[in-house]
Length: 146
Image (cartoon, rainbow, N blue to C red; front, side):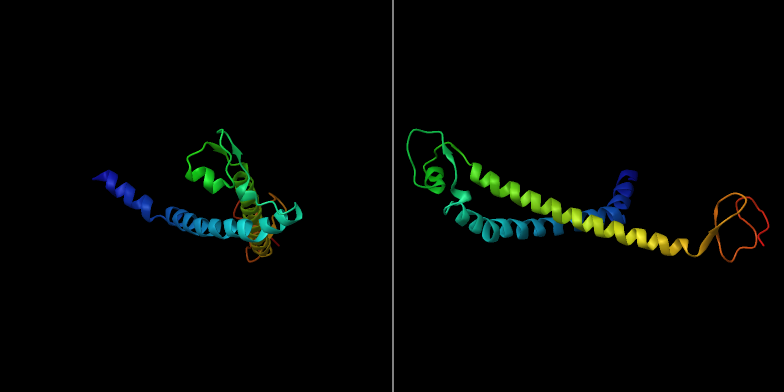
């Protein structure tokens, strides 16, 4: 019975719920990034590289030649799909960069909040602790403040 109580506390905790929400949003974000790479970025890159379709680049490990990756896969031929790997690598890099920008912005906001909190305090001249501007005695060293 105790284990169910502990599990309930874990599942209802804010951090577990935040994690679940993060996974759901991350999944949706992944679809957007995949579409950005496949549908928006790769066609112009392929055009610049003489109409290369990266999703159709592969190495056939079998002896029969196929016109497209889809045809080779439908026939069950063994293939190395390096074009799809390039698309996925690009999607990963874009996702990682977007997450980096989000974390950087959140850290900037946290630092700004910390600075605002620090403005309501000053350093004790005796023990160098942060104390409220309203204090008449230092709560750490109990020195009288003028």
